Length: 411
Image (cartoon, rainbow, N blue to C red; front, side):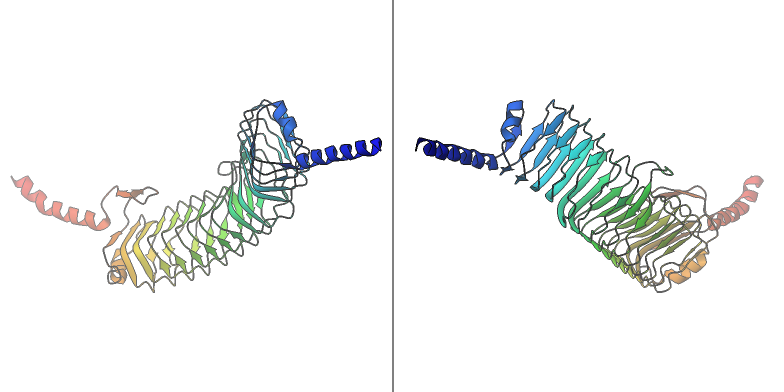
């Protein structure tokens, strides 16, 4: 009888311990070894866990399986490894920031995380990701030494940002179809750096806000149809840029400072709601926007010295503010243009300003300005300062001097 009672008591104690081990309530700020031992008795935590400013080198929480809040690992100067070998579910975010010696974040059984924010871990080489997760909130990976990111299975993300990852040479999201907010990708290195590589989003259809890709040798977005706000494709080393399905840009489209870009092709793009800008693409021969009909603000091109004839916009009928073209143009062909606020054409070659005025004066609501063969300076904000008068101005000055000089000599 006594043994039966003891057995019941032992079972009750074991059950109570199991209950305590399974569920831990509230937030945990882990500062000491005692805090760490206490947390290691939990399999699930209803709040957030924060490890900040510790002097541990190896942090392992082997019992944790589920966390309803954030898992924050920040500013631990000695930390080399974080291991959550049995963690399966993080409802909110995995946040790993400012751990200068951290090399590994090990979560082999993680199948869901609300978001991933990894930044300023300059020695980080290994980051485990959920292999089959379809949706994620923020996915920010910045300033690491990661060489690759396997298991990028996401179909939908709220926000994606990847830059200053000094060992990553290419980025591939094989299934990503939708980004609700912003998509920023910048591979590391300077122009011409061998580290620069390729950016692949083969299934991407829409970006809700801004999209920016820089420092890439190749951009593969064959299914992209809409960008809700700005699309910036700057400082890349690709020789051609084709977005074959893109139909609309809800903000500005800027394609600037792409040193080796020879060809641009956006065949079905119909509208750019704000400014379209092409600047400092020194090898650009053919900018082609065959279906573009409207530009909501300005259409600008400068320092694209291989473009002689501006004729890549055969469907363009409306530019609400200004057309501003500067470079080595000999001709401007916008045959169906019906409405534009102001127009400026400045060329160091002999563009025919008489023809420009004849063709566009009646279509421009404001002023048409044309510098014929002018030697000029310009900046990326499209200010310019003619260094000398245009051909017409020089001719008039010569005539006036010829008229005045004899009278002056006679005095």
